[in-house]
Length: 414
Image (cartoon, rainbow, N blue to C red; front, side, top):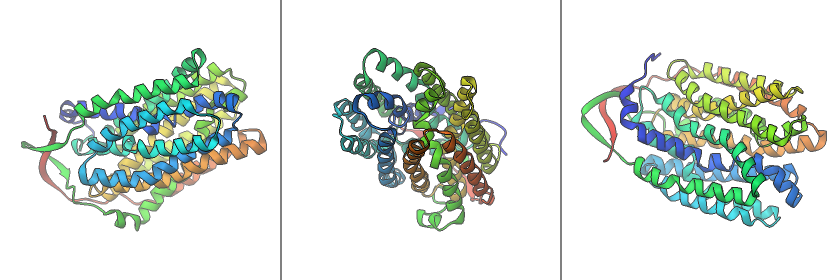
C-alpha cells in the first residue's frame, strides 16, 4: 500500500493533467449525457416527445460510443491520444451547433446523437486517460481520478447553468452555448497534451509498457468478465435514473429550480468521488473500494424513495458518488489486472460492456415509469443491481504481479 503522494509527478505534468480534466468536462461523455435531463421537459413541452422516446436518444449516443471506442482505444495505443482529441473537439462542437435545428422528428434526434458519439469519440475519457497514464506511476489512481473529475464539474454546473439559459432564453440557445464551451477546449488541448519523450537524467520504477495482456488475452480472462459484468449491472438502471432525475424529483413535489439544484448534487458527489476514489485506489485494493461505492449507490436509491426534498438531494449526491467512481475503478482495475500493454484497448472493451447497460437503462426506466407511473420500482431494482455487482467484484482475485524495472521517466516535448 503506497502511503505517500509523489509530488514531482504533479509538478512536472500539471498542465497535461489540467487539460485532460477540462477536456473530459467538455467531452461528449459529459456535455450531452449530463445535459439531457435539463432538456427533457422543454423538449417534451415543445414536441410532445415522451421520456422513453428521449431516453432512446441517449441509448443511440451510447451505441455510438460502443462502436467508436475500440477504434479510439487502438489509435491511442498505437499513435497516442493527441490527434484523436484535436480532431474530435471541433466536430463535437459542430454537432452541438446543429442541435437547435431539431424540427420535431425523433429520427433526426436519434441520428444526431449517434453521430455526436462517433464524431466526438476522441473526447471520451479513454483518450484523456491515455494522455496522462504514462506520466503518473506512483499516483496513477489519483491522476485518473482528477482527469475523470471533469465530468463531475459538468454534472455539477450543467443543471443550474442550463436551467438559467433555458429559462431566460430557450433550449436552442442553451445548446449553442455548449458548442462554444466545447470549442474553447481546443487551444488548451493543443498546447498541453503533447507527445512524450524520455529524459535520461531521471529514472523511476514503472511497469514496462510491453507487459500485460493483449486485448485477446484479456477477453478470455474470467476477471475481465467479472469486472465488466459488475459494471454492466451498475449501469443497467443507474444510467437511466440519472437522465430522469429532474422529472423524478419534480414528481416528488419539488419545483423545477429546486430539482435542478438537487440534481447538481450528482455533480458534487461525482466530483468528490473522482478525486477521493482515485486517492483510495493508490492505497487499498480496488475490490474493496468498488463494493463500498456500490453500497453508497444503493443507499442513495433508498433515499430517493422518500418524500423529503433534503433526503432526495442527499440521495442524488450519493448516486453521483458512485457514478463518479465507475470510470476511475474501470480505468485503474484494467491497468492493474491486465497491465499497460494494451490498456486503452482493454479499457475501451470494458467500457463497451458497461455502456450496453447504459443503452438499456433509459428504455428500461422509461417503460417501467410508463406502466407504473412511478419511479419506486426502478429504485428498488437498482438496489438489487448494486448487490449483484458487489458479488461479482468480490469474486475477482488479487492483482497479478507485473514485473518492473528502472526505465526513463516521461516528460512532455517542449
